[in-house]
Image 1: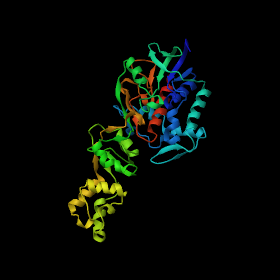
Image 2: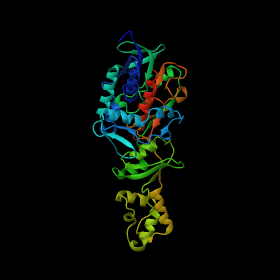
Image 3: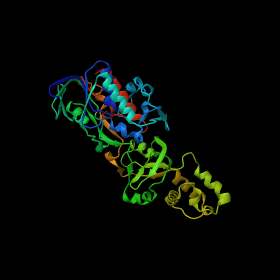
Image 4: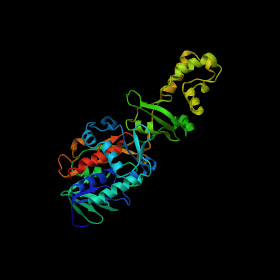
Length: 391
């Protein structure tokens, strides 16, 4: 490798890096992709239970978190979810909508990895695995254990810090800082929430219970109505993963365990003919959870023995159970990284560093993080495409 000179070197063979490399190679650029891993596209392969939730029908800028919420607009509008669906269709990959606009392969996620590798090879791009870049120097000399490589332009697509067992590191942030770019402090996103031992006395006995719920933050408008799962460590499930990206230390998470129902009206109606029933049996919730909710409301006994204030407290415990998490499970189980290379230092159309011509950052390395459900893959495709048009 020593002494090689390429038009473009892409660091990272994930979704964003491979897509960018394909686009650049199709424009006639001599493109080399380097990755320290032994296999490309591993996040693609394991995502969606091995079927890859590759995009979402409802992509919208407000479903992405960033210090500059408008930054993602350009790339997302110029390369849309429909553009990627068309590419999937052209490759003959069958897919289906699971829920909430989430699109999955009918078969294996490996089909998408294979499509990207085939497209890269056909476009003339070169992929080298097991090559770990250690530093990027001025003049775009990339140092590796196998020797230096020089490039006219460099695209950093090495992702964030989530899922370290797959080799995730903060390499992209080090490169950014070496060249004078800002980095928004990375945090674990789309991650289960954990609680203190005292709180777990209530939560742990409920481990394994799952149900639809509306989960929000006290005093905030944002809320997600999806599955909720109680675990031995705290709370998980899609609704919790979603709200975790917005949660900050000290904030209370609000749980509506019966979204769309009016528990107050239900229990008042039940008093007429079923007043002898135990409170637990009136809630139409899993029994262990119903007992916890009744205890949370400070109640016990029969329905008929409860006054209006007691029934109001019961309804409040069901529709607005508030818990203050102690933290998250962190990088080990986080699906994405919040924060990253500061968008104020990047051009939204090209993903190029504003004051460092020829240096680009794409995908999860950037301070743009989508909701659960295919949004982050679409950001990878869109940001990779945008950089691929100009490098």
